[in-house]
Length: 465
Ligand SMILES: [Zn+2]
Image 1 (spheres, rainbow, N blue to C red):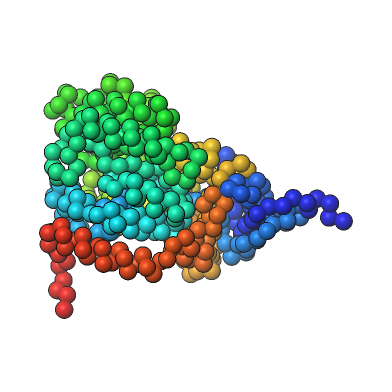
Image 2 (image 1 turned 135 degrees about the vertical axis):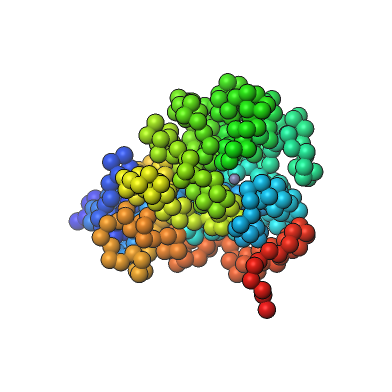
């Protein structure tokens, strides 16, 4: 009698609301998604989909708001997650980077970097992030890549590459060594059809010679991958480039042919109007890390030009950076911040509406990662990367305006279930692809060991009795 109901699917996901982030930004009331293997094959009203499909499993229901998986376009998955919060929050920028962070990174062993990467991944998944772009600061790349593949998160990664700073000695690389390292990483780990794959990633700032910048760009073209680097969070980068080349960083990188639409620049707080014009012209993306900017006092509300960048058509997405500059990896908290910072700074409530903030966390992040045809929205043919937000929580009720409450009321703690590539990786608030209790114990003992080996003092201000 029910002739239409003949199609088998692996999963039917039901929701109170489905936030699609499709072209017309449709929100489907009483909606569902049909998933086969790793792909969304239908999105629509529950009443329609339940008559069309025979699912192997059906999840979700009236209590959930379903969104695309979020995309964190700048995070250090090693180095800092395992030393989270050890750096005092009143540390000046230069001391923060060179005395604290470089030291804490440099003493880490492979098993500690692996645990750190797992911790970052679990934190991202449990707060609704399904894809990330690593900052390019993994020291023990082979070991981390292999273990990370078991977690089920999507990501683009890279190892520590620079050629100018001589210290700390553990990072020292000649230009040739740095180029070979980058090339080897791409040869071995460029697997764009897998969840994890390598990108052409440099540390950036003033740490790279022109030959290294150019080599990274050549690899980006050769392997058709993105190129990512830090640039201009503080005056140090523009001052360094002006001293060396008589040009601001983005002007110089454009002049030597490095900048194009595949570039993702992290921070970009101290940029001139001419640099913004160049970024708009080449179509580069910016990874904005609002928490880092606040905690490390970059001055974004004073000098940041993110509204102007967006106005000029530059794609700006979100990152959470390292866990000593931004102690969390919950992208919903970063979206909340970006929705508020410039409303206040410019005394204009129309700056970064909730809808735009959530675009930055999803579809704009997909553009930064050059994956907008695969992720960032819930549409037929895209990967089944999605999040079920639990509305049976005080911050979600009453639910009267989904986007407003998604950004301004909710955060990652309300994430109940997460799918990546059609597979459930978080269920009932727990990551099911690893032993969480074991991880908590491991990172505690390893974090204490790393802090001890670093020789850096415990600067917690209150006496611990
Ligand atoms: Zn960073």
